[in-house]
Image (cartoon, rainbow, N blue to C red):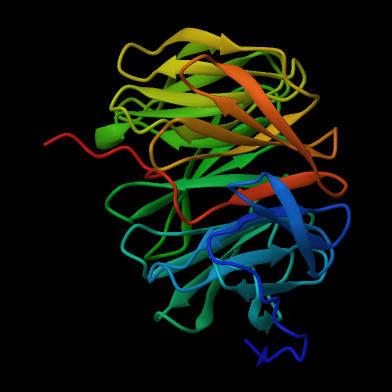
Length: 320
């Protein structure tokens, strides 16, 4: 894939900014985590929805889904490092745990693209047609399989990364979106955005064994790094549910939020949960000791992806 350096001036901001993707504005917004103030913006390509830190931690990849490129930025400051062109419709993206594969989900193009990754460059391995509307993904812990939700067919698909072949598809319900794998790869949790629940797939039997009622528009997950809980945003009800992934039950709801909670990030001390409000042009900060929204910050239109470097681990550790 072609790579070109940008001539845009780097923003001379302090390190460790919060980075928010304003997908409706073609920009990223930078927030000072100490003052909760917006300190600047940086232009991106069209419709930057999701982002992903590189395995070496040196770059944050912003996926510009309509501009068909990946923009690499400094994960601390948000300043642009380089752009990789020719990555078609990267709505969502993710690295396999062994860091050998970069996968992008083409929401508009109804396909998943699988790339070899050598630590610097991406090389297309295969394009896998997947109708219809592939959106979110997660990986098996052994890096053999990527799981993709298909929003408009109500399915989850499993793709073998070595062969780039679809292993199986499973109907799960209306408009599946975010996925999260419990430790040990026992259960796959899926946010059912067209429903009011999280579907639970037993990975041994490949069956939906339970649906956990959360709230309307269950959408995306964030591990809470306590060995027990994961959060899920309910985009229509404007709430966040806390699930116990050991007992597969809901244990709490966070209410009093702004419209459209979507992506989340957790501070390293696990005290604060940041969340983008997709329908409200704001980012919110939740005190996890009280489950109360303690601050909101105005950003651009349709804030989606969210990142800061000083964060708690994203994935729960696998049991010994």
